[in-house]
Length: 138
Ligand SMILES: [Zn+2]
Image (cartoon, rainbow, N blue to C red):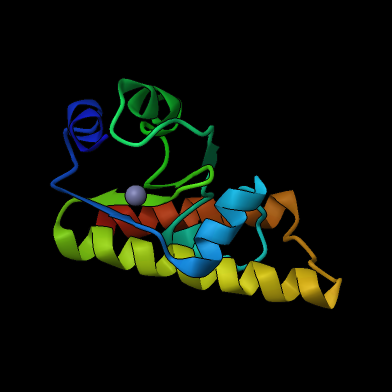
Protein backbone atom coordinates (compact mmCIF):
# COMPACT_ATOMS: atom_id res chain seq x y z
CA UNK A 1 0.00 0.00 0.00
CA UNK A 2 2.70 2.49 0.97
CA UNK A 3 4.82 1.70 -2.10
CA UNK A 4 1.82 2.03 -4.40
CA UNK A 5 1.16 5.52 -3.08
CA UNK A 6 4.81 6.55 -3.50
CA UNK A 7 4.86 5.17 -7.06
CA UNK A 8 1.62 6.87 -8.08
CA UNK A 9 2.32 10.20 -6.36
CA UNK A 10 5.86 11.49 -6.88
CA UNK A 11 4.92 14.53 -4.78
CA UNK A 12 4.42 12.34 -1.70
CA UNK A 13 7.24 12.02 0.81
CA UNK A 14 5.37 10.37 3.68
CA UNK A 15 2.42 8.03 4.22
CA UNK A 16 0.50 7.61 7.47
CA UNK A 17 -1.79 4.66 8.15
CA UNK A 18 -3.93 4.40 11.29
CA UNK A 19 -7.23 3.17 12.69
CA UNK A 20 -8.75 6.25 14.36
CA UNK A 21 -12.03 5.34 16.06
CA UNK A 22 -14.51 7.66 14.40
CA UNK A 23 -13.14 7.59 10.86
CA UNK A 24 -12.72 3.82 11.05
CA UNK A 25 -16.33 3.64 12.22
CA UNK A 26 -17.38 5.40 9.02
CA UNK A 27 -15.15 3.07 7.01
CA UNK A 28 -16.73 0.08 8.72
CA UNK A 29 -20.22 1.41 8.09
CA UNK A 30 -19.44 1.86 4.41
CA UNK A 31 -19.82 5.64 4.53
CA UNK A 32 -17.32 7.90 2.76
CA UNK A 33 -16.45 11.28 4.24
CA UNK A 34 -17.31 13.12 1.06
CA UNK A 35 -20.13 15.41 2.12
CA UNK A 36 -19.31 19.15 1.89
CA UNK A 37 -20.36 19.99 5.43
CA UNK A 38 -17.46 22.06 6.67
CA UNK A 39 -15.69 24.79 4.69
CA UNK A 40 -12.36 24.26 6.44
CA UNK A 41 -12.25 20.63 5.37
CA UNK A 42 -13.18 21.41 1.75
CA UNK A 43 -10.25 23.85 1.63
CA UNK A 44 -7.65 21.81 3.50
CA UNK A 45 -8.46 18.17 2.84
CA UNK A 46 -11.13 17.80 0.18
CA UNK A 47 -13.34 14.76 0.12
CA UNK A 48 -12.26 11.46 1.64
CA UNK A 49 -13.45 8.52 -0.48
CA UNK A 50 -14.05 4.97 0.71
CA UNK A 51 -11.96 2.24 -0.92
CA UNK A 52 -13.51 -1.25 -1.05
CA UNK A 53 -12.37 -3.82 1.49
CA UNK A 54 -9.29 -5.90 0.74
CA UNK A 55 -7.09 -8.06 2.95
CA UNK A 56 -4.26 -6.31 4.75
CA UNK A 57 -0.83 -6.78 3.21
CA UNK A 58 -2.06 -8.03 -0.17
CA UNK A 59 -1.83 -6.59 -3.66
CA UNK A 60 -5.62 -6.41 -3.61
CA UNK A 61 -5.41 -3.72 -0.95
CA UNK A 62 -3.22 -1.54 -3.17
CA UNK A 63 -5.57 -2.19 -6.09
CA UNK A 64 -8.57 -1.07 -4.04
CA UNK A 65 -6.83 2.22 -3.20
CA UNK A 66 -5.30 2.93 -6.62
CA UNK A 67 -8.29 4.64 -8.27
CA UNK A 68 -8.40 7.22 -5.45
CA UNK A 69 -4.71 7.93 -4.97
CA UNK A 70 -4.18 10.46 -7.79
CA UNK A 71 -6.90 12.90 -6.75
CA UNK A 72 -7.15 12.51 -2.98
CA UNK A 73 -4.80 12.94 -0.03
CA UNK A 74 -6.75 10.74 2.38
CA UNK A 75 -8.67 7.52 1.84
CA UNK A 76 -10.95 5.48 4.10
CA UNK A 77 -10.24 1.76 3.85
CA UNK A 78 -13.44 -0.26 4.28
CA UNK A 79 -13.56 -2.29 7.49
CA UNK A 80 -9.98 -1.31 8.28
CA UNK A 81 -8.88 2.30 8.78
CA UNK A 82 -7.46 5.34 7.05
CA UNK A 83 -4.42 6.21 4.96
CA UNK A 84 -3.19 9.76 4.41
CA UNK A 85 -0.13 11.13 2.66
CA UNK A 86 1.67 14.36 1.99
CA UNK A 87 4.91 16.06 1.08
CA UNK A 88 6.38 15.20 4.48
CA UNK A 89 5.47 13.32 7.65
CA UNK A 90 4.00 16.40 9.32
CA UNK A 91 1.58 17.06 6.46
CA UNK A 92 0.60 13.38 6.26
CA UNK A 93 0.04 13.26 10.04
CA UNK A 94 -1.98 16.48 10.08
CA UNK A 95 -4.17 15.11 7.31
CA UNK A 96 -4.82 12.03 9.45
CA UNK A 97 -5.81 14.29 12.33
CA UNK A 98 -8.08 16.27 9.96
CA UNK A 99 -9.82 13.09 8.79
CA UNK A 100 -10.65 12.05 12.36
CA UNK A 101 -11.71 15.60 13.24
CA UNK A 102 -13.99 15.73 10.21
CA UNK A 103 -15.42 12.29 10.97
CA UNK A 104 -16.46 13.59 14.41
CA UNK A 105 -18.10 16.66 12.84
CA UNK A 106 -20.02 14.51 10.34
CA UNK A 107 -21.08 12.12 13.12
CA UNK A 108 -22.44 14.97 15.25
CA UNK A 109 -24.24 16.58 12.30
CA UNK A 110 -25.84 13.26 11.41
CA UNK A 111 -26.83 12.64 15.03
CA UNK A 112 -28.48 16.04 15.11
CA UNK A 113 -30.40 15.07 11.99
CA UNK A 114 -29.57 18.28 10.15
CA UNK A 115 -26.43 17.70 8.12
CA UNK A 116 -26.79 20.60 5.70
CA UNK A 117 -24.32 20.56 2.83
CA UNK A 118 -22.65 23.62 1.36
CA UNK A 119 -24.14 24.32 -2.07
CA UNK A 120 -22.22 23.53 -5.26
CA UNK A 121 -21.32 27.14 -6.00
CA UNK A 122 -19.81 27.60 -2.54
CA UNK A 123 -17.89 24.33 -2.84
CA UNK A 124 -16.47 25.59 -6.14
CA UNK A 125 -15.35 28.83 -4.45
CA UNK A 126 -13.68 26.82 -1.71
CA UNK A 127 -11.94 24.55 -4.23
CA UNK A 128 -10.58 27.69 -5.93
CA UNK A 129 -9.42 28.99 -2.56
CA UNK A 130 -7.72 25.64 -1.98
CA UNK A 131 -5.89 25.92 -5.29
CA UNK A 132 -4.79 29.46 -4.42
CA UNK A 133 -3.71 28.33 -0.95
CA UNK A 134 -1.66 25.42 -2.31
CA UNK A 135 0.13 27.67 -4.83
CA UNK A 136 0.95 30.38 -2.31
CA UNK A 137 1.28 28.58 1.00
CA UNK A 138 2.54 25.14 0.03
ZN1 LIG B 1 -4.15 -1.20 9.38
